[in-house]
Length: 425
Image (cartoon, rainbow, N blue to C red; front, side, top):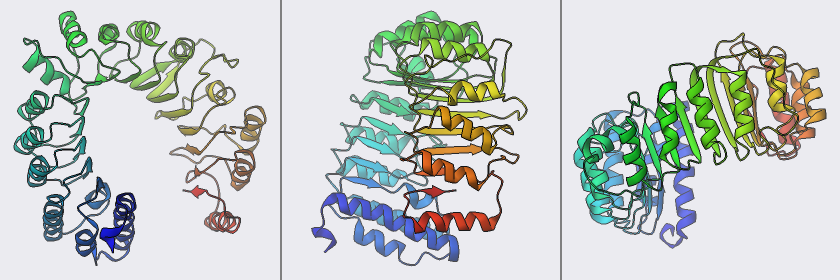
Protein backbone atom coordinates (compact mmCIF):
# COMPACT_ATOMS: atom_id res chain seq x y z
CA UNK A 1 0.00 0.00 0.00
CA UNK A 2 2.78 2.47 0.90
CA UNK A 3 4.50 1.69 -2.38
CA UNK A 4 1.40 2.84 -4.28
CA UNK A 5 1.35 6.28 -2.66
CA UNK A 6 2.59 9.32 -4.60
CA UNK A 7 6.16 10.13 -3.63
CA UNK A 8 5.23 13.53 -2.15
CA UNK A 9 2.75 11.97 0.29
CA UNK A 10 5.28 9.28 1.18
CA UNK A 11 7.95 11.91 1.84
CA UNK A 12 5.65 13.94 4.09
CA UNK A 13 4.63 10.80 5.99
CA UNK A 14 8.26 10.12 6.87
CA UNK A 15 8.62 13.57 8.43
CA UNK A 16 5.34 13.27 10.34
CA UNK A 17 6.04 9.77 11.66
CA UNK A 18 9.48 10.80 12.95
CA UNK A 19 7.89 13.80 14.67
CA UNK A 20 5.18 11.64 16.25
CA UNK A 21 7.65 9.05 17.53
CA UNK A 22 9.88 11.84 18.83
CA UNK A 23 7.00 13.06 21.00
CA UNK A 24 6.61 9.54 22.37
CA UNK A 25 10.33 9.25 23.07
CA UNK A 26 10.23 12.54 24.98
CA UNK A 27 7.52 11.15 27.27
CA UNK A 28 8.52 7.49 27.70
CA UNK A 29 12.17 7.17 26.53
CA UNK A 30 11.01 4.26 24.34
CA UNK A 31 11.36 4.01 20.55
CA UNK A 32 8.60 1.57 19.75
CA UNK A 33 8.15 1.18 16.01
CA UNK A 34 10.85 3.57 14.81
CA UNK A 35 12.98 1.03 12.97
CA UNK A 36 9.93 -0.72 11.49
CA UNK A 37 8.39 2.57 10.33
CA UNK A 38 11.57 3.55 8.53
CA UNK A 39 11.81 0.13 6.91
CA UNK A 40 8.27 0.47 5.59
CA UNK A 41 8.28 4.17 4.65
CA UNK A 42 11.65 4.49 2.90
CA UNK A 43 10.34 3.36 -0.48
CA UNK A 44 12.40 3.31 -3.71
CA UNK A 45 10.31 6.05 -5.38
CA UNK A 46 11.13 8.66 -2.70
CA UNK A 47 12.90 11.70 -4.20
CA UNK A 48 13.22 14.02 -1.18
CA UNK A 49 14.29 12.31 2.02
CA UNK A 50 14.20 14.49 5.14
CA UNK A 51 15.54 12.62 8.17
CA UNK A 52 16.62 15.79 9.98
CA UNK A 53 14.51 14.98 13.05
CA UNK A 54 15.73 11.42 13.35
CA UNK A 55 18.75 11.94 15.61
CA UNK A 56 18.87 15.70 16.10
CA UNK A 57 15.65 15.79 18.13
CA UNK A 58 16.01 12.41 19.86
CA UNK A 59 18.73 11.13 22.17
CA UNK A 60 18.69 7.38 21.59
CA UNK A 61 20.88 4.52 22.90
CA UNK A 62 23.93 3.71 20.77
CA UNK A 63 22.66 0.30 19.67
CA UNK A 64 19.43 1.82 18.36
CA UNK A 65 21.35 4.58 16.57
CA UNK A 66 23.47 1.98 14.80
CA UNK A 67 20.45 -0.14 13.85
CA UNK A 68 18.63 2.88 12.41
CA UNK A 69 21.67 3.96 10.38
CA UNK A 70 21.84 0.43 8.97
CA UNK A 71 18.18 0.67 7.90
CA UNK A 72 18.77 4.05 6.27
CA UNK A 73 21.85 2.80 4.45
CA UNK A 74 20.03 -0.29 3.17
CA UNK A 75 16.92 1.57 2.02
CA UNK A 76 18.78 4.50 0.42
CA UNK A 77 20.58 1.92 -1.72
CA UNK A 78 17.27 1.47 -3.57
CA UNK A 79 16.24 5.15 -3.87
CA UNK A 80 18.03 5.74 -7.15
CA UNK A 81 15.86 8.78 -8.01
CA UNK A 82 16.75 10.61 -4.80
CA UNK A 83 17.44 14.32 -5.36
CA UNK A 84 17.51 15.76 -1.81
CA UNK A 85 18.90 14.05 1.31
CA UNK A 86 18.87 15.61 4.79
CA UNK A 87 20.20 13.68 7.77
CA UNK A 88 21.14 16.24 10.36
CA UNK A 89 23.19 14.59 13.13
CA UNK A 90 24.88 11.19 13.05
CA UNK A 91 25.10 10.57 9.33
CA UNK A 92 28.04 8.31 8.45
CA UNK A 93 30.58 7.63 5.73
CA UNK A 94 28.75 4.40 4.92
CA UNK A 95 25.57 6.28 4.05
CA UNK A 96 27.48 8.85 1.96
CA UNK A 97 29.17 6.02 0.06
CA UNK A 98 25.77 4.50 -0.72
CA UNK A 99 24.55 7.89 -1.97
CA UNK A 100 27.63 8.27 -4.15
CA UNK A 101 27.24 4.82 -5.65
CA UNK A 102 23.48 4.63 -6.18
CA UNK A 103 21.99 8.15 -6.30
CA UNK A 104 23.42 9.92 -9.37
CA UNK A 105 20.58 12.49 -9.51
CA UNK A 106 21.12 13.94 -6.06
CA UNK A 107 21.55 17.74 -6.01
CA UNK A 108 21.35 18.59 -2.31
CA UNK A 109 22.86 16.85 0.74
CA UNK A 110 22.83 18.05 4.36
CA UNK A 111 24.78 16.01 6.91
CA UNK A 112 25.63 18.56 9.59
CA UNK A 113 26.59 17.69 13.19
CA UNK A 114 28.35 14.36 12.88
CA UNK A 115 31.67 12.86 13.92
CA UNK A 116 31.01 9.86 11.66
CA UNK A 117 31.42 11.82 8.42
CA UNK A 118 35.05 12.01 7.27
CA UNK A 119 37.05 12.96 4.19
CA UNK A 120 36.53 9.46 2.83
CA UNK A 121 32.74 9.78 2.80
CA UNK A 122 32.83 13.23 1.20
CA UNK A 123 35.17 12.03 -1.52
CA UNK A 124 32.88 9.10 -2.36
CA UNK A 125 29.87 11.41 -2.46
CA UNK A 126 31.54 13.97 -4.72
CA UNK A 127 32.86 11.34 -7.14
CA UNK A 128 29.47 9.65 -7.53
CA UNK A 129 26.99 12.54 -7.33
CA UNK A 130 28.12 14.72 -10.21
CA UNK A 131 24.94 16.83 -10.15
CA UNK A 132 25.53 17.95 -6.56
CA UNK A 133 24.74 21.67 -6.14
CA UNK A 134 24.42 22.14 -2.39
CA UNK A 135 26.27 20.47 0.49
CA UNK A 136 25.89 21.18 4.21
CA UNK A 137 28.70 19.93 6.49
CA UNK A 138 28.68 22.32 9.45
CA UNK A 139 30.08 20.67 12.61
CA UNK A 140 31.39 17.57 10.88
CA UNK A 141 34.38 17.47 13.20
CA UNK A 142 36.37 14.76 11.41
CA UNK A 143 36.35 16.58 8.07
CA UNK A 144 39.61 18.37 7.25
CA UNK A 145 40.75 20.68 4.45
CA UNK A 146 41.46 17.64 2.28
CA UNK A 147 37.83 16.52 2.38
CA UNK A 148 36.61 19.99 1.46
CA UNK A 149 39.20 20.13 -1.32
CA UNK A 150 37.96 16.85 -2.82
CA UNK A 151 34.40 18.17 -2.97
CA UNK A 152 35.45 21.44 -4.60
CA UNK A 153 37.63 19.56 -7.08
CA UNK A 154 35.08 16.90 -8.08
CA UNK A 155 31.71 18.68 -7.80
CA UNK A 156 31.77 20.87 -10.89
CA UNK A 157 28.16 22.02 -10.44
CA UNK A 158 28.49 22.93 -6.76
CA UNK A 159 26.81 26.26 -5.95
CA UNK A 160 26.73 26.26 -2.17
CA UNK A 161 28.87 24.55 0.45
CA UNK A 162 27.86 25.21 4.04
CA UNK A 163 31.30 24.98 5.59
CA UNK A 164 32.96 27.46 7.94
CA UNK A 165 36.45 27.06 6.44
CA UNK A 166 35.53 27.19 2.76
CA UNK A 167 37.43 30.43 2.16
CA UNK A 168 40.70 29.14 3.59
CA UNK A 169 40.52 25.99 1.45
CA UNK A 170 39.76 27.93 -1.71
CA UNK A 171 42.69 30.28 -1.21
CA UNK A 172 45.20 27.69 0.04
CA UNK A 173 44.39 24.90 -2.45
CA UNK A 174 43.27 26.72 -5.61
CA UNK A 175 44.83 30.19 -5.39
CA UNK A 176 47.57 29.34 -7.90
CA UNK A 177 45.26 27.62 -10.37
CA UNK A 178 42.89 28.89 -13.04
CA UNK A 179 39.94 26.87 -11.75
CA UNK A 180 36.54 28.51 -12.11
CA UNK A 181 33.73 27.71 -9.67
CA UNK A 182 29.94 27.97 -9.88
CA UNK A 183 29.74 28.93 -6.20
CA UNK A 184 27.06 31.47 -5.31
CA UNK A 185 28.02 31.58 -1.61
CA UNK A 186 31.37 32.24 0.10
CA UNK A 187 32.00 31.41 3.77
CA UNK A 188 34.85 31.85 6.22
CA UNK A 189 33.91 31.93 9.90
CA UNK A 190 36.10 29.26 11.52
CA UNK A 191 38.92 31.80 11.75
CA UNK A 192 39.09 35.48 11.01
CA UNK A 193 39.13 36.43 7.32
CA UNK A 194 42.20 38.58 6.65
CA UNK A 195 42.50 38.70 2.86
CA UNK A 196 45.00 40.54 0.73
CA UNK A 197 43.74 42.60 -2.18
CA UNK A 198 44.99 39.97 -4.62
CA UNK A 199 43.08 37.24 -2.73
CA UNK A 200 39.80 39.11 -3.07
CA UNK A 201 40.52 39.80 -6.75
CA UNK A 202 41.09 36.07 -7.32
CA UNK A 203 37.81 35.19 -5.58
CA UNK A 204 35.91 37.73 -7.67
CA UNK A 205 37.45 36.41 -10.90
CA UNK A 206 37.13 32.67 -10.34
CA UNK A 207 33.84 32.73 -8.40
CA UNK A 208 31.95 35.15 -10.67
CA UNK A 209 28.47 34.05 -9.55
CA UNK A 210 28.81 34.99 -5.87
CA UNK A 211 25.62 36.47 -4.42
CA UNK A 212 26.09 35.61 -0.74
CA UNK A 213 28.98 36.04 1.71
CA UNK A 214 29.27 34.90 5.34
CA UNK A 215 32.51 35.90 7.07
CA UNK A 216 34.20 36.56 10.39
CA UNK A 217 36.10 39.78 9.77
CA UNK A 218 37.45 42.92 11.42
CA UNK A 219 36.03 46.28 10.44
CA UNK A 220 39.32 47.26 8.77
CA UNK A 221 39.04 44.43 6.22
CA UNK A 222 35.36 44.90 5.42
CA UNK A 223 35.98 47.29 2.56
CA UNK A 224 37.67 44.49 0.57
CA UNK A 225 34.49 42.42 0.67
CA UNK A 226 32.77 44.93 -1.59
CA UNK A 227 35.07 43.76 -4.40
CA UNK A 228 33.68 40.21 -4.30
CA UNK A 229 30.68 41.00 -6.51
CA UNK A 230 27.16 42.40 -6.44
CA UNK A 231 26.12 40.66 -3.25
CA UNK A 232 22.51 40.15 -2.22
CA UNK A 233 23.21 38.44 1.11
CA UNK A 234 25.82 39.66 3.60
CA UNK A 235 26.38 37.90 6.95
CA UNK A 236 29.03 39.49 9.17
CA UNK A 237 30.58 38.27 12.40
CA UNK A 238 33.01 40.63 14.10
CA UNK A 239 34.67 40.95 17.49
CA UNK A 240 35.10 44.67 16.93
CA UNK A 241 32.81 47.68 16.83
CA UNK A 242 31.38 48.47 13.41
CA UNK A 243 33.09 51.56 12.06
CA UNK A 244 34.23 53.15 8.83
CA UNK A 245 34.71 49.79 7.10
CA UNK A 246 31.06 48.90 7.67
CA UNK A 247 29.87 52.33 6.54
CA UNK A 248 31.91 51.97 3.33
CA UNK A 249 30.67 48.49 2.48
CA UNK A 250 27.05 49.46 3.10
CA UNK A 251 27.40 52.46 0.81
CA UNK A 252 28.87 50.27 -1.96
CA UNK A 253 26.74 47.12 -1.62
CA UNK A 254 23.56 48.41 0.00
CA UNK A 255 21.59 49.02 -3.18
CA UNK A 256 21.57 45.27 -4.00
CA UNK A 257 21.37 43.79 -0.49
CA UNK A 258 18.28 41.77 0.34
CA UNK A 259 19.55 40.09 3.52
CA UNK A 260 21.89 41.59 6.11
CA UNK A 261 22.98 39.68 9.21
CA UNK A 262 25.29 41.22 11.81
CA UNK A 263 26.83 39.76 14.95
CA UNK A 264 29.19 42.11 16.78
CA UNK A 265 29.96 43.84 20.08
CA UNK A 266 28.31 47.14 19.30
CA UNK A 267 26.04 48.67 16.69
CA UNK A 268 25.71 52.43 16.60
CA UNK A 269 22.55 54.37 15.91
CA UNK A 270 24.41 55.87 12.97
CA UNK A 271 24.90 52.33 11.60
CA UNK A 272 21.14 51.75 11.76
CA UNK A 273 20.46 54.99 9.91
CA UNK A 274 23.02 54.05 7.23
CA UNK A 275 21.43 50.62 6.73
CA UNK A 276 18.01 52.20 6.32
CA UNK A 277 19.21 54.81 3.84
CA UNK A 278 21.54 52.61 1.78
CA UNK A 279 19.56 49.33 1.63
CA UNK A 280 16.15 50.06 0.06
CA UNK A 281 15.65 46.43 -1.09
CA UNK A 282 16.51 44.86 2.27
CA UNK A 283 13.87 42.29 3.24
CA UNK A 284 15.70 40.51 6.09
CA UNK A 285 17.70 42.11 8.89
CA UNK A 286 19.31 40.12 11.73
CA UNK A 287 21.25 41.98 14.42
CA UNK A 288 22.87 40.30 17.42
CA UNK A 289 24.92 42.68 19.54
CA UNK A 290 25.84 43.63 23.08
CA UNK A 291 24.55 47.14 22.80
CA UNK A 292 23.14 49.82 20.51
CA UNK A 293 24.85 53.11 21.23
CA UNK A 294 25.12 56.61 19.80
CA UNK A 295 24.08 60.22 20.14
CA UNK A 296 22.56 60.58 16.68
CA UNK A 297 18.78 60.49 16.74
CA UNK A 298 16.99 57.59 15.10
CA UNK A 299 14.56 59.21 12.70
CA UNK A 300 12.37 57.16 10.38
CA UNK A 301 9.40 58.70 8.62
CA UNK A 302 8.64 55.65 6.53
CA UNK A 303 11.38 56.01 3.95
CA UNK A 304 13.88 53.74 5.78
CA UNK A 305 13.64 49.93 5.50
CA UNK A 306 10.59 50.16 3.19
CA UNK A 307 10.85 46.50 2.09
CA UNK A 308 11.67 44.83 5.43
CA UNK A 309 9.66 41.65 6.06
CA UNK A 310 11.88 39.91 8.64
CA UNK A 311 13.47 41.60 11.66
CA UNK A 312 15.55 39.69 14.22
CA UNK A 313 16.93 41.94 16.96
CA UNK A 314 18.85 40.50 19.91
CA UNK A 315 20.61 42.87 22.30
CA UNK A 316 22.20 40.95 25.15
CA UNK A 317 23.40 43.81 27.36
CA UNK A 318 19.96 44.21 28.82
CA UNK A 319 19.93 47.92 29.65
CA UNK A 320 20.50 49.28 26.17
CA UNK A 321 17.19 49.36 24.25
CA UNK A 322 15.39 52.69 24.04
CA UNK A 323 11.85 53.64 23.10
CA UNK A 324 13.34 55.49 20.15
CA UNK A 325 14.94 52.29 18.81
CA UNK A 326 11.72 50.28 19.06
CA UNK A 327 9.72 53.06 17.39
CA UNK A 328 12.36 53.40 14.67
CA UNK A 329 11.46 49.94 13.37
CA UNK A 330 7.98 49.06 14.59
CA UNK A 331 6.20 52.31 13.78
CA UNK A 332 7.35 52.37 10.16
CA UNK A 333 8.17 48.85 8.89
CA UNK A 334 4.69 48.13 7.59
CA UNK A 335 5.53 44.94 5.67
CA UNK A 336 6.89 42.92 8.61
CA UNK A 337 5.93 39.24 8.52
CA UNK A 338 8.37 37.87 11.10
CA UNK A 339 9.53 39.78 14.18
CA UNK A 340 11.88 38.49 16.88
CA UNK A 341 12.96 41.02 19.50
CA UNK A 342 14.96 39.91 22.54
CA UNK A 343 16.26 42.61 24.84
CA UNK A 344 15.36 44.52 27.96
CA UNK A 345 12.05 45.90 26.72
CA UNK A 346 10.46 47.01 29.98
CA UNK A 347 8.92 49.85 27.99
CA UNK A 348 6.78 47.36 26.05
CA UNK A 349 3.54 47.50 28.03
CA UNK A 350 0.03 46.74 26.82
CA UNK A 351 -0.60 50.46 26.36
CA UNK A 352 2.62 50.95 24.41
CA UNK A 353 1.90 48.01 22.08
CA UNK A 354 -1.61 49.35 21.50
CA UNK A 355 -0.16 52.71 20.50
CA UNK A 356 2.24 51.01 18.07
CA UNK A 357 -0.51 48.94 16.48
CA UNK A 358 -2.77 51.97 16.10
CA UNK A 359 -0.09 53.51 13.87
CA UNK A 360 1.28 50.34 12.26
CA UNK A 361 -1.18 47.43 12.69
CA UNK A 362 1.31 44.85 11.32
CA UNK A 363 -1.36 43.43 9.03
CA UNK A 364 1.15 41.12 7.31
CA UNK A 365 2.61 39.65 10.52
CA UNK A 366 2.79 35.85 10.76
CA UNK A 367 5.25 35.36 13.63
CA UNK A 368 5.86 37.70 16.58
CA UNK A 369 8.25 37.11 19.48
CA UNK A 370 8.98 39.59 22.27
CA UNK A 371 11.42 38.06 24.75
CA UNK A 372 13.80 38.99 27.54
CA UNK A 373 15.82 37.40 30.31
CA UNK A 374 13.63 39.55 32.54
CA UNK A 375 9.85 39.75 32.45
CA UNK A 376 8.21 41.49 29.50
CA UNK A 377 5.29 43.56 30.89
CA UNK A 378 2.86 42.40 28.22
CA UNK A 379 -0.23 40.52 29.40
CA UNK A 380 -2.94 38.32 27.95
CA UNK A 381 -4.73 41.48 26.81
CA UNK A 382 -1.98 42.05 24.24
CA UNK A 383 -2.48 38.56 22.83
CA UNK A 384 -6.15 39.31 22.19
CA UNK A 385 -5.16 42.64 20.65
CA UNK A 386 -2.70 40.96 18.29
CA UNK A 387 -5.27 38.34 17.28
CA UNK A 388 -7.76 41.09 16.43
CA UNK A 389 -5.22 43.27 14.61
CA UNK A 390 -3.03 40.80 12.69
CA UNK A 391 -5.22 38.59 10.46
CA UNK A 392 -2.39 36.32 9.24
CA UNK A 393 -0.77 35.69 12.61
CA UNK A 394 0.39 32.07 13.02
CA UNK A 395 2.69 32.17 16.06
CA UNK A 396 3.29 34.31 19.16
CA UNK A 397 6.33 33.83 21.39
CA UNK A 398 5.22 34.94 24.85
CA UNK A 399 7.05 32.88 27.48
CA UNK A 400 8.67 36.01 28.95
CA UNK A 401 5.35 37.85 29.23
CA UNK A 402 3.49 38.61 32.45
CA UNK A 403 0.69 36.08 32.99
CA UNK A 404 -0.17 33.11 35.17
CA UNK A 405 -0.09 29.47 34.12
CA UNK A 406 -3.86 29.37 34.44
CA UNK A 407 -4.24 32.36 32.11
CA UNK A 408 -1.96 30.71 29.56
CA UNK A 409 -4.01 27.49 29.46
CA UNK A 410 -7.25 29.48 29.24
CA UNK A 411 -5.79 31.37 26.29
CA UNK A 412 -4.77 28.15 24.54
CA UNK A 413 -8.30 26.85 25.02
CA UNK A 414 -9.69 30.09 23.61
CA UNK A 415 -7.52 29.72 20.51
CA UNK A 416 -8.60 26.10 20.10
CA UNK A 417 -12.30 26.86 20.62
CA UNK A 418 -12.25 29.60 18.01
CA UNK A 419 -10.27 27.40 15.60
CA UNK A 420 -7.48 29.94 15.15
CA UNK A 421 -4.44 28.76 13.21
CA UNK A 422 -2.19 30.10 15.96
CA UNK A 423 0.64 28.60 18.00
CA UNK A 424 1.39 30.06 21.44
CA UNK A 425 4.80 29.34 22.91
